Image (cartoon, rainbow, N blue to C red; front, side, top):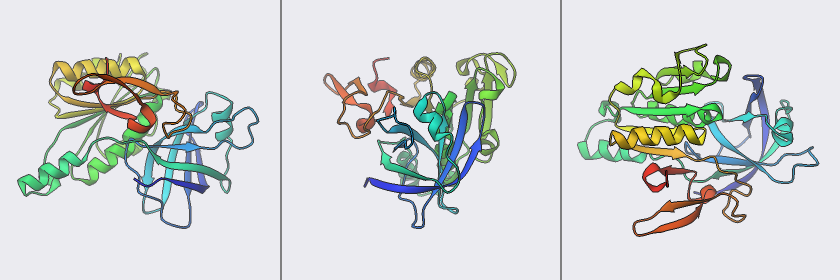
Length: 272
């Protein structure tokens, strides 16, 4: 997929929580094609100690408004500077980067069965935790557009960590957990009662311990599962080698750059 370096204009900024901000970007020309699970490398201007771009997951693409949404967790000097952006500011972005979640399989199955995707009732579970909830929204929107109703399973420490719930509800069933019990079922996502339901495929993104637990559940129940890794990615192009992950191939193990070969991997390839 072709990559672009674009100066995008900030058209909206929403504070989602004390630590999270939603930045909406646009340009005069139609935005490039982007897939769920891909990410953007953004340049941080006005921050003298921030030398490298910051990788941000694609949260949502609003084609009607020609907007790209990025959810930013303000945890360091660079991301705090991004949180100070105002409408009218310009953000330089390299996009789209990486490989996204696999959803073409559903189109293929629909074609083989000679039915519309709306009639293919694949049960998909989308599990997100923390800022890992961000790519689940765009993924869920695309699955919904294909005629499916995904189930979102979202987890946080408290209710304040559960973001964009109204947007998620537009595209599927929403189940939540919180560690303190302030919303939804108390505990971790892998403790939620919805896991008693049948699912054909699982997608997950979030803290590594959470994704490992989801991967174990998927393997125990013979469910195909993909995880989006959150390794440190400085360049986004596979040049700096700071995001290397050891994965399985058909015959051996090998090191790959998550930013280039991922960030999405089938969990069977991961050494979990």
